[in-house]
Amino acid sequence: MKDFFYAIRDLFVDVLFAPLDALRKLELESWFGANFMSWIFMAVGFVAFVYWMLQLKKYNDNNEEDKSISSHSYL
Image 1 (cartoon, one colour):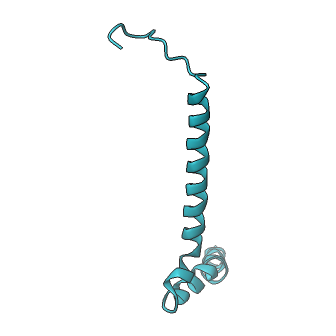
Image 2 (image 1 turned 90 degrees about the vertical axis):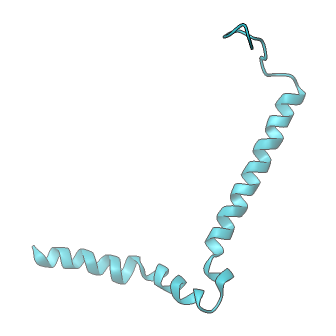
Image 3 (image 1 turned 45 degrees about the vertical axis):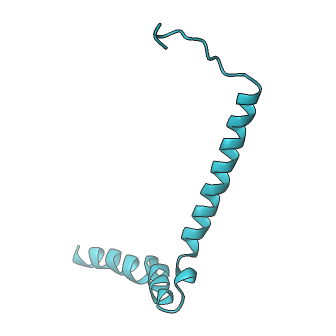
């Protein structure tokens, strides 16, 4: 049973975490290169945010939203 858990440890340490070790070594040479995935995620998030805002503006310009007061009289 001990060998089974050592095999799991070896799988994670030697195989699955190898890309993270490479990024850790790359950070000493190039900070921007080591964070390229973060830049990609930020770019995708920015594009999605701009698309979302343009869609909201389109629906707002068409007056498709029901803005009638129905829940509280003070609104």
